[in-house]
Structures are given as C-alpha cells and as structure tokens.
Image: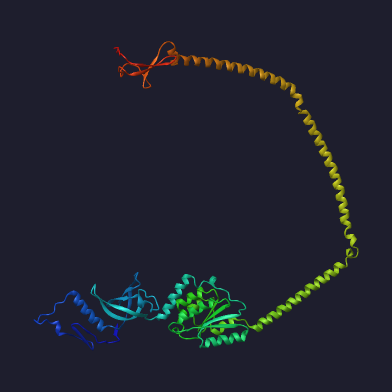
Length: 476
C-alpha cells in the first residue's frame, strides 16, 4: 500500500510534472520530426527524475524480507506483500532514529522516497523512518533491549549493591519541577529530617532526556558524600517514560558504584532502568520510604537496644558480684598461708626425687668411665711396639733389595742405549778418518752441480777446512 503524502511540483529536463500529470516537452522531438534517441544512462536519469518528483515523500506498508546490514552500517532489504515486492535501503544516518531492530518477517510501515539506482536501473525506496505494525515500535524496542542487556548480565542479582542502612545524603536525578521530586522531599523530611538531599535536575521525557539522566548519574558518582541515588519520575504513557528505557541510561546505572533506586511511573509500570537498578521502587514516594528509615522507629529501636544492653550488663554485674562474694567466703581468703601448704609439700617431694636421681646418675657415669679406661688400657699401643719394630726392619731389608735390583736393570738398559747411539753417531765415523763436504751448508753426495773454483767446506773429526775446487773427476 503506497500513499503519497506530499505532491511537490518539480521541473526536469524534457519533462514537466503538474498536479500529478506528466507531459512530454517539445524538446523531446527533434527539429527534423524524428523521435529523440536516448542513451541508456540518459533514459535512466530521466526516469529517476520522474520517480523522485512523483514519489518524494511516501508511506509504504509491507513485510520485510532479506534484511541485511553491511560493513558500512547501511541496511538493505525487500518490502513485499502477497503480489509484489520492492527493494529498499536504510542508510546509516537514518538508522539511529528507529527504535527497534528490523527483522525478516516484520510487518512494518516505512516512510521514505522513491529513487532509481542508476548502476542497475532498479527503483528502490530510500527509507527515512520505520515502525512496526501490530506491536508498537517502542514496545518492540523495549523487548529487544531487555533481551540484549539481560544476555550481557546487567540484570544479574549478584551485581546488585545493597542500600546503606542509614544514609545521610541522598542524590536524586529527576525533573526539578515535577511532582516526583516534591513527593521524595516530603517523604524524606517526614521520615528523617536529618537526611540531606542533593538534586541533580534532568529532563525526564522528550529529546535529550536520556543524556541528561545519564549525565546526572555520572556527576553524582564523582562525589564522595552521596550514599544512594534515586532516579525516576511520575506516571505517564510508554512514550513519556521512554527516557528510562534508553540503553544509555541503563549502562550509566550499571556503571555506577553508588547504589541506585529506580522509581519510574506507577506500580504497574516497568522500565529497563528498573531491571538494571539495585532496587526497584513502584513510585518515587516508595523509593524515599525504602531508602530512608523512620527516625522515630530508629530511635525507638536504639532505646530498646540500650535498655536491653543495660539490663544485660546489670545481670552480668550481679552474677559476678555473687560469685565474688561466694569466693570470699571460702577458707583460703581468711587463712591464705594454707594455699601454699600443698605446694610446699610438692617442692619437698621433688627435691627428694632430684637427689635420688643425681646419685643414680653419678653411679652410672662412674661405671661407664671405668669401662672406658679398661678398654683404653687394652688398646694401648705399647703392647704392639716390639712387633712393629721387627716388621719395620724386614720391610727396610726388602726395600733395599728391590731398589738394588731396579738400579741394576736400569743401568744395563742405559748402557745398551749408549752403544746404539754411538753406532749411529756421525762423529764416530769421522773419527775413523772420514770427512763431510758441504757447499752453502748443504752436504755433498756427488760432484754434480760443482764447478771448478767453487768453495767447499770439509768437516773433519777435529776441525774443518775451507777448500777451492781445482779439478773435478766424475766417476760412472
């Protein structure tokens, strides 16, 4: 179902739109009387101009199908009924204004404009707002956010902080002109006039209300004297209470280190802040009653406890007084020396036992000493000295024979080695009349390489000769 809410008159090249009628401009016919030939892009552009001019502001009802959101944050889907379908796009900038998360199968009423996507020549609806049909948009958004935060654990009971038993300073986040703040102040003043209240005024409905409520919670958390915070407002419709259903408020409550009491609307009204807060009060007045105990009742309880404590102390004192009196009537208080008689007797007994023990110990130690002296005498080295002398003489004699044998063997081996060395000693050969000839410190084995007039050195057994070659005789 399509309803055109606004009919805006626009002129486009080659086209004219007037009160919903479209006529072809004379420029669409060439001067030769031939029809205008369009390029595909030109035709698409003109169709787009007609579509955007005719349907620039429409409401369309249908069922969502193939809903998807890409990485850029833009969403694409198909809107259909039982006979037709049309492509739709929801840009990221318009997504924030929609209070619920669209899903496949949702029956919705959307507002937007018709345009043509040039690249494919397809017409589509550019969606600007959307609301579900049947279940209200706010109610669906409420349910979706509730499920999301519950999965994150913001409603867990173990995260709830206990309220202080006797708070002395309370922070309140609500409208400064509403009935809620007056009810809270009246109740607190009546229950305990000693308690002070710090009001952090904030809008509680309309645009910007959620931001102000969250900011108020944050500001109160910066103070060290606030012991508990009350947030809330009086009753109203779901739209009026919506600021307390915003995710921003819920997360501000969860992040607060100060206990928070949520008091929104009437007893039958429930908001997201009620589930996240540490305590839910049905009304602002009830929040004040739950937070601040009655001073008169507290004083009565203190008085009762004081009387109970005094009676208990008096009973204790009487009990110990009677006990002391009974003890003082005993005999040892009148004859205190008798207290030491059993102890004196015990000391005498221990003294006798100590003397007997010392005597027995001395006898035992004396016997052990005599045994050790006897054992030492038996083990005296004087008895074994003659035997040791004989053994030492025998060992010396054996050692002398062994050394003589070793020396004789070493001497024979040494003399044999000397003989072998003399056999190979070149000096022994020279001693028999031989000599060694050398040239340039190299021994000569033949006359090859020697020329007449060369200087050679002749080594004898004793001394050496520097000679000059006069004649060379070569032998075969």
